[in-house]
Structures are given as C-alpha cells and as structure tokens.
Image (cartoon, rainbow, N blue to C red; front, top):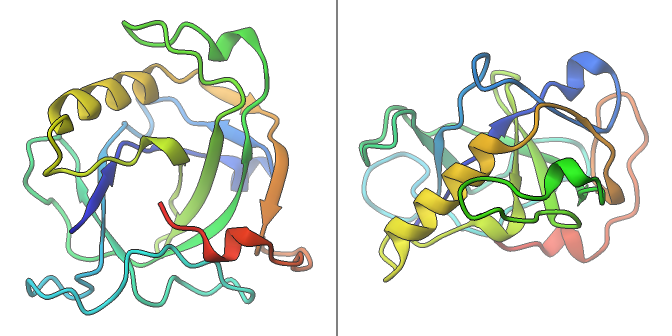
Length: 182
C-alpha cells in the first residue's frame, strides 16, 4: 500500500548549506507525492516502503516515488528514484506557528530532505504521511496540503540533524535514522 504526502521544494543545494531553504511555490509548487514499493509501475510491490538512507549517497534501492502534480489522484509521472539526504527538527520561530486555516504550529517538527535523480530537492514533515485508503484520507490530505503550501519561504535552521550523506562532506555515523520508516 502506498503512502502519500505533500512536499515542498528546497533550494539548499544552491545556497551551499545544510539548512532548509523553502522555495517559493511559484518556483516549485506543492505537489502530491506517492512513495511506492511498486518500482516499475506494473501493479506488483517488488520493493519496500522502508525509506533507506545510504552511506554512499546512492538512491533508495527499493522504493520509488510518483507525482500527482495537480492533486487529482492520477499519477503524472512514472517511477522516480530518490536519495534521502538528511533531516532535523524545525526551529522554534514564530513564523512556523499559525499556518493554514487551522493555525497549525509546526515548530519542533521533524523534516526530511530528499533529492530526486534529476537533482530536484524536496522536503516534507515526517509526521505528514497519510494512507490514501484510510478513513480520514481526504481531510488529512487537505490539512497537510494547506500547511505545506503555507510553509514560509526562505531559510530555516534545523536542529538535531541526522545526516547520512551530503555531497562534498564526510558521512556521519548512522543512528536509528538508518532504519527510518514513514
């Protein structure tokens, strides 16, 4: 069964640092992302939904993503490989409080940054995965879209970093994050 979430664009690679730099949605819109164990889009789960960090910075070996760019439920891409880069916790700044119609506070939430094979970087909040077949899927989808779409643009210094591979740096020891599951 796939897992879905709404990620935003991250421009950290162009900024040359390990902070989160949320891109403007005019540059990279909030899009529905599906993590799938169906690595070749043939209807059979031949991979896994465990998101794998790799020591050498290679792609997740058995999970792929698909995009639904307009949120209509139809996949707009074939399977796309990705690499989990790093994660950390959002800072306790006031601009991360009062987001979307429900005034959600995401200060201190854990965020994960990944890079697609084409070099596109995305970030998402770890707690924002949802089951598309779950009883609250429509509400959860709308809530997480609204929060991520309202996420403030610009730099956000992350705390409690867990890093597995960042180009041009040394690899850090793996922790429980190496076995991280959504």
